[in-house]
View 1 (spheres, one colour):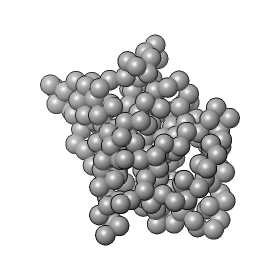
View 2 (cartoon, rainbow, N blue to C red):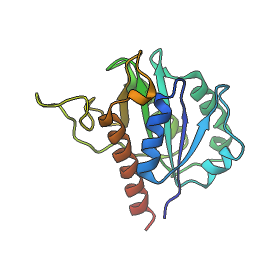
View 3 (cartoon, rainbow, N blue to C red):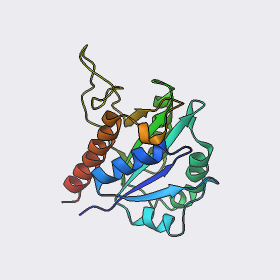
View 4 (cartoon, rainbow, N blue to C red):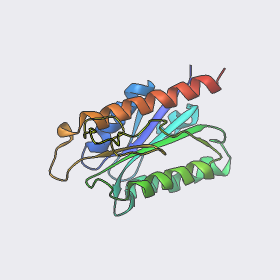
Length: 184
């Protein structure tokens, strides 16, 4: 069975809630990046042992949070030794705006994974893009490169849309499925 880690930063709790949904779907271990951009004790070892790493960050000012970027810069140590080469990678993000330039955050994560010699897993879900689609549908934002969610700026993490959380869960399941198939 593949060991999967979800490493994420959350500023206001929304990205954490999405991370929990992704981890639930993947059967993954959560590794939270703190408010200073640091991993908890044992965090680097968890990532080293993982066969798949799923990145998560809110989208702030057209990119990931500075705390996530600090983690990304600190990952130069495993990069130098190619310790994460051939691991599976995936990513997710949340922002207050429907678009909010979330794709740039996912692109950042993709390129980070490519720097590490990783293999990227997209979400593999069809978008909810018919006239009948609602915010509670799976992949209502229509992302293909990772999971995206939207939380209004005046909404608490408890008010996140069920479709976004289900998208996260199914996204995590997809990463786990791919990891299992590749580990045979």
